[in-house]
Image 1 (tube, rainbow over the protein chains, first blue to last red):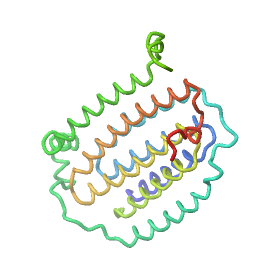
Image 2 (cartoon, rainbow over the protein chains, first blue to last red):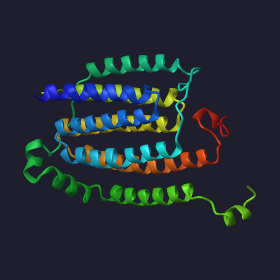
Image 3 (cartoon, helix red, strand yellow):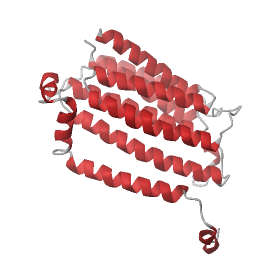
Image 4 (tube, each protein chain N blue to C red):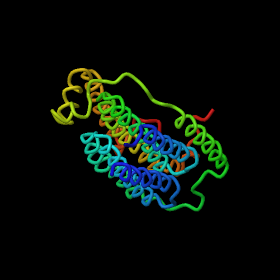
Length: 175
Length: 100
């Protein structure tokens, strides 16, 4: 059963990724990105990462993508005739060659390594979110705090950047 | 049982898709969406190896990556709004003041 679901999620996410970079209308690209994010969340569920899958749906599809679509509709971008860099279209050739190279390397590798303590059975005993929470607030406490400060900086930066400048601000400027 | 190399394969294909999008698209917002595709490809890799190697570190890192992506989207879209409002440019290739 799992291989069938994996094939479905993998195929749809790849097709949705291709549509995201190739569709003409930006809103359609956003919808294709939504399909991609949802099916990547499905892949996470297959990998026994239920909490990450839910976070992916809530944060990525629910917040980040809505932000993208909001800005897209706010700016009212017109669909363009020339929406690719024509001069740089030969990059696709290089990217295709890179893909083939990557696939060859990946199919040949075995990905062996030292196993950790968190087997599926051990995690299921206390629950996925509990296990992640215990790890995040013990071993990864410093990165967690850094991410918090980073998000505060990002919020302040975004507000300062997008704020409509008042006339008083502009008069003091040489702008 | 799906081998981990299958997940890595999907991740690699998605990553090069996003890379191609960053390189060839002209619209700001689509370029940023392509960056999101690349971040998602990296997330698939992290979670796949977390499962494969019986460790939760990859899942915790994925949560951090999602948080960073949220911050990146907020700041990037704010810059895009400023660029559009000032009628500085409508495409990425028109912003070349810092181009060497």
